[in-house]
Image (cartoon, rainbow, N blue to C red):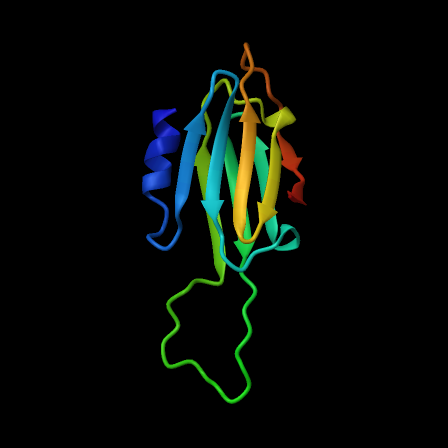
Length: 120
């Protein structure tokens, strides 16, 4: 799990993420302001997870950017603990916060999958 913790530290400064662990699962919470379930893609293999998020933003009429610091796109690859069950993972986005629940399994046999992102 230390590889995942280290990878979270390497995310861009504008990306905030928390990693939680219980006896039977991991919970990864990533702030992705401006995203919706339709603009976030999550896929996983036994060794890692790929998160892609596109932030929707609009410019009010009569305004133009003087400075634009917030990224429109997040593309992050994170390693996963060997006991994370990617085949049973669940993801949801609500108000720009991605919650990815990865149950733990007894043996390391996952095959990889795309994880549907739901609205909570």
